[in-house]
Length: 108
Image (cartoon, rainbow, N blue to C red; front, side, top):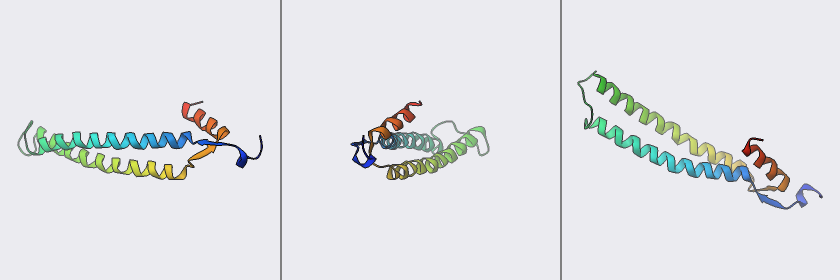
């Protein structure tokens, strides 16, 4: 077909998959943060299942608060990591490269 530079370029399917992943992560992480924020706020305000200091409910409350913070930290690293991968990917690739990338994405 000619030199690779002469081949028509198409959208990079790997980059497209990463962009979709980033968008999904943005919406899901916000939803997750909101869910954990409300549950944590309810437990911290003792609106649900309370016990004296050191009781089972207090332990659960402290565990939930810690997990909320830990998940927030971990989730905060996901989107920048995906964005870094997107930045490495060319927007356009040759048709042959696109076919191979598509096959990789499909698990062939």
